[in-house]
Image (cartoon, rainbow, N blue to C red; front, side, top):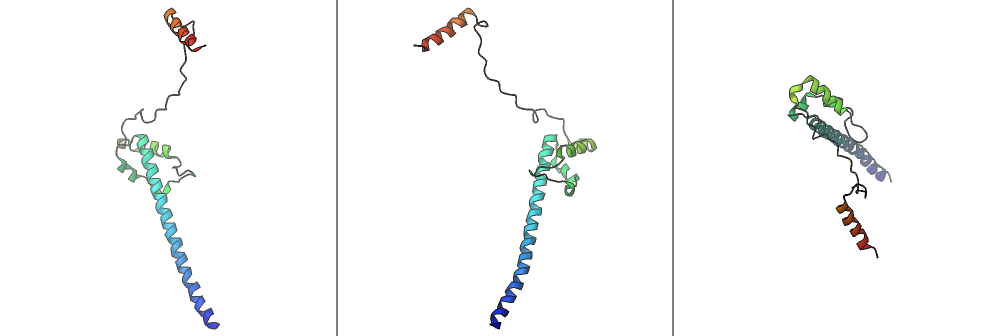
Length: 133
Protein backbone atom coordinates (compact mmCIF):
# COMPACT_ATOMS: atom_id res chain seq x y z
CA UNK A 1 0.00 0.00 0.00
CA UNK A 2 2.90 2.34 0.68
CA UNK A 3 4.12 1.73 -2.83
CA UNK A 4 0.87 3.00 -4.34
CA UNK A 5 1.02 6.18 -2.25
CA UNK A 6 4.58 6.81 -3.35
CA UNK A 7 3.61 6.28 -6.97
CA UNK A 8 0.77 8.81 -6.77
CA UNK A 9 2.76 11.60 -5.14
CA UNK A 10 5.22 12.22 -7.97
CA UNK A 11 2.31 12.36 -10.44
CA UNK A 12 0.65 15.13 -8.41
CA UNK A 13 3.92 17.02 -8.22
CA UNK A 14 4.43 16.67 -11.97
CA UNK A 15 0.94 18.09 -12.70
CA UNK A 16 1.72 21.40 -11.01
CA UNK A 17 4.41 22.53 -13.51
CA UNK A 18 2.16 21.48 -16.39
CA UNK A 19 -0.65 23.61 -14.96
CA UNK A 20 1.72 26.56 -14.70
CA UNK A 21 2.92 26.14 -18.26
CA UNK A 22 -0.69 25.89 -19.45
CA UNK A 23 -1.55 29.08 -17.56
CA UNK A 24 1.53 30.78 -19.00
CA UNK A 25 0.51 29.67 -22.48
CA UNK A 26 -3.03 30.99 -21.96
CA UNK A 27 -1.76 34.33 -20.70
CA UNK A 28 0.60 34.64 -23.70
CA UNK A 29 -2.23 33.87 -26.13
CA UNK A 30 -4.48 36.38 -24.38
CA UNK A 31 -1.79 39.06 -24.61
CA UNK A 32 -1.30 38.33 -28.33
CA UNK A 33 -5.07 38.49 -28.88
CA UNK A 34 -5.30 41.85 -27.10
CA UNK A 35 -2.36 43.22 -29.11
CA UNK A 36 -4.02 42.18 -32.38
CA UNK A 37 -7.31 43.76 -31.33
CA UNK A 38 -5.54 47.01 -30.45
CA UNK A 39 -3.68 47.01 -33.78
CA UNK A 40 -6.88 46.35 -35.75
CA UNK A 41 -8.76 49.02 -33.83
CA UNK A 42 -5.97 51.54 -34.40
CA UNK A 43 -5.98 50.76 -38.13
CA UNK A 44 -9.73 51.27 -38.32
CA UNK A 45 -9.58 54.58 -36.45
CA UNK A 46 -6.65 55.75 -38.59
CA UNK A 47 -8.50 54.99 -41.82
CA UNK A 48 -11.59 56.82 -40.55
CA UNK A 49 -9.43 59.80 -39.61
CA UNK A 50 -7.85 59.88 -43.08
CA UNK A 51 -4.33 58.72 -42.30
CA UNK A 52 -2.31 58.38 -45.50
CA UNK A 53 0.36 55.95 -44.28
CA UNK A 54 -0.55 53.48 -41.56
CA UNK A 55 3.12 53.22 -40.59
CA UNK A 56 2.43 56.38 -38.59
CA UNK A 57 0.68 54.17 -36.05
CA UNK A 58 4.10 53.02 -34.87
CA UNK A 59 4.50 56.46 -33.31
CA UNK A 60 1.73 55.70 -30.81
CA UNK A 61 2.29 53.98 -27.48
CA UNK A 62 0.15 50.86 -27.84
CA UNK A 63 0.65 49.84 -24.21
CA UNK A 64 -1.40 52.84 -23.02
CA UNK A 65 -4.40 51.95 -25.21
CA UNK A 66 -7.36 50.37 -23.43
CA UNK A 67 -10.18 48.28 -24.93
CA UNK A 68 -13.78 48.49 -23.75
CA UNK A 69 -16.21 45.59 -23.21
CA UNK A 70 -16.96 45.46 -26.96
CA UNK A 71 -13.24 45.26 -27.81
CA UNK A 72 -13.18 48.80 -29.19
CA UNK A 73 -10.49 51.33 -28.40
CA UNK A 74 -11.48 53.74 -25.64
CA UNK A 75 -10.95 57.30 -26.89
CA UNK A 76 -9.82 56.22 -30.37
CA UNK A 77 -11.24 59.28 -32.12
CA UNK A 78 -9.56 61.64 -29.64
CA UNK A 79 -6.30 59.74 -30.05
CA UNK A 80 -6.41 60.26 -33.83
CA UNK A 81 -7.38 63.93 -33.43
CA UNK A 82 -4.37 64.46 -31.16
CA UNK A 83 -2.10 62.66 -33.62
CA UNK A 84 -3.50 64.77 -36.49
CA UNK A 85 -2.81 67.94 -34.51
CA UNK A 86 0.74 66.86 -33.57
CA UNK A 87 1.72 65.29 -36.91
CA UNK A 88 -0.55 66.65 -39.67
CA UNK A 89 1.67 65.34 -42.50
CA UNK A 90 0.49 61.80 -41.70
CA UNK A 91 -3.06 62.67 -42.75
CA UNK A 92 -4.64 63.64 -46.04
CA UNK A 93 -7.57 65.98 -46.55
CA UNK A 94 -10.71 64.89 -44.77
CA UNK A 95 -13.11 62.93 -46.94
CA UNK A 96 -16.81 63.31 -46.38
CA UNK A 97 -17.60 60.10 -48.23
CA UNK A 98 -16.24 57.81 -45.53
CA UNK A 99 -18.21 59.27 -42.63
CA UNK A 100 -21.42 60.32 -44.37
CA UNK A 101 -24.57 58.89 -42.85
CA UNK A 102 -27.04 56.95 -44.94
CA UNK A 103 -30.07 59.09 -45.75
CA UNK A 104 -33.25 58.11 -43.95
CA UNK A 105 -35.66 56.17 -46.10
CA UNK A 106 -39.03 57.75 -46.68
CA UNK A 107 -42.04 55.92 -48.04
CA UNK A 108 -43.13 56.80 -51.55
CA UNK A 109 -45.77 59.48 -51.27
CA UNK A 110 -48.62 59.27 -53.77
CA UNK A 111 -50.09 62.38 -55.30
CA UNK A 112 -53.50 63.42 -54.08
CA UNK A 113 -56.31 64.13 -56.54
CA UNK A 114 -55.84 67.87 -55.96
CA UNK A 115 -52.18 67.67 -57.04
CA UNK A 116 -52.89 65.67 -60.23
CA UNK A 117 -53.56 67.06 -63.66
CA UNK A 118 -56.79 66.05 -65.36
CA UNK A 119 -55.02 63.40 -67.44
CA UNK A 120 -53.22 61.91 -64.40
CA UNK A 121 -56.51 61.85 -62.47
CA UNK A 122 -58.29 60.03 -65.30
CA UNK A 123 -55.54 57.38 -65.50
CA UNK A 124 -55.47 56.88 -61.72
CA UNK A 125 -59.27 56.64 -61.51
CA UNK A 126 -59.38 54.12 -64.37
CA UNK A 127 -56.71 52.01 -62.65
CA UNK A 128 -58.69 51.98 -59.41
CA UNK A 129 -62.07 51.21 -60.94
CA UNK A 130 -60.63 48.49 -63.17
CA UNK A 131 -59.77 46.32 -60.14
CA UNK A 132 -63.08 46.77 -58.33
CA UNK A 133 -65.96 44.40 -59.06
